[in-house]
Length: 204
Image (tube, rainbow, N blue to C red; front, side, top):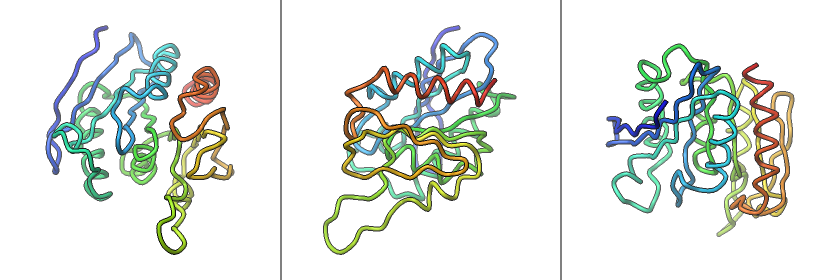
């Protein structure tokens, strides 16, 4: 089956979905990008390729602010609303009837966590979850509550030297450390192994 790109209306502008279908899919995986990067980041591409190999249709989603050419990310409420709109659109068409895993890198992982219930996700895949923002003044607030609120299985793949910190594991949350920092550029083999093992358990 052939990859296709869809422009999808959301409450905050057009989003763009890059659909990578497989024959007889076992599930679907929707992935969002980081705040300053696009869907071509190496860890997202590695995750996409592993999921396709496991018989999972993959959709890489560009948020409206990126499609519009803006560098600064939109507020959280806008990101979440646009993401849910995209997933709902895909769920009525390209991903109809498929169990859905959601995720992304950094900012995209946060969006996936916050909207996991709204999107009826069966799992959340977080690449480089930005646990604690860089300190400017005072004590920055941890984003751990966003992870803790997810009530389905979660995989966090985190660089050992990530300056945003390393989330703890939990009853439903597996944390895999790989060589590298927040960019997750250093060790694609370990990322692939972690994603492959987790996805296989989740969608078997």
